[in-house]
Length: 312
Image (cartoon, rainbow, N blue to C red; front, side, top):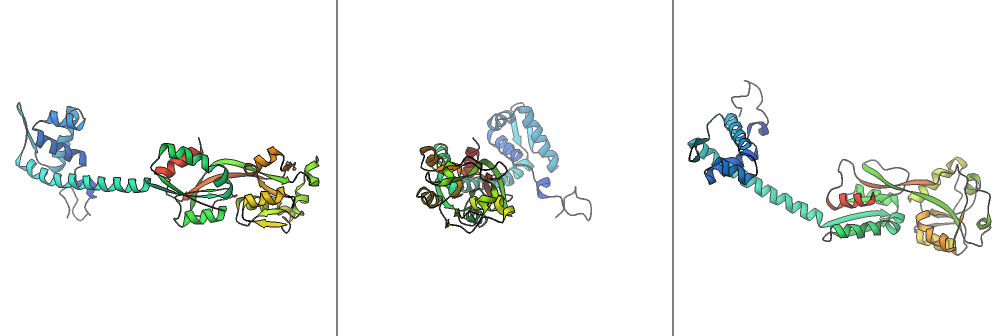
């Protein structure tokens, strides 16, 4: 159904252009209840001139006089009384909408599902989650740890609200933000010949040496594979393990060299249980740490707060 303002033969204007805004309807109902434009304005927290302007705009939009003003107050006209009946239904529907929206936000804010790569999950995320609990003590957090490829799949499938990965790139369908950087170290047990090495390890030598490696799909492996690709490496692994903790234990026991996150081995290197081997400066073993989420859906609620904490 078109309005008088619609040109003949033209589709009607959008409903938002034809129906008064919620604030104008609330004002009309307040005037009807209080019998005074001034009191209605004070109740709604606006100035009387602003209330007068809003009421005039409403009358102009509808094309009828809605309020009769007098020295003793303001009363609705017959048309105004009829419009107020319709307005009350709209305001009540808006109130129901608001209650429902708050319930949805409450349900969203009551839980947070996080997926994180092994390194971030073990060495960075605990501190962030403790800080998040201080801000949102009522939010229940579940954490799934896996390699970076598995984390990306969980976020894409909707099984996690926010993910943390450490690979070289982000799969299609995800947006991301860099939250930090990490360096991979070549580490050996103190008794290994490389532990006494002073000359930097070249990429070609590292590429031909059997190493203790993380599994394919992990961020650590992605970075190492890319760094050694020009040298046809890495060589067939000495061991291929799905856990940083297991890779560290094997290296400490003297099984062989490993390439692992500096975050993961800092304690062992500091205590002398592992030795960091110097590498050539042109060996690219630095990586970005990223938060990821479904493309086009910026994190909200607890996920937004956690993302903010990673940048603090």
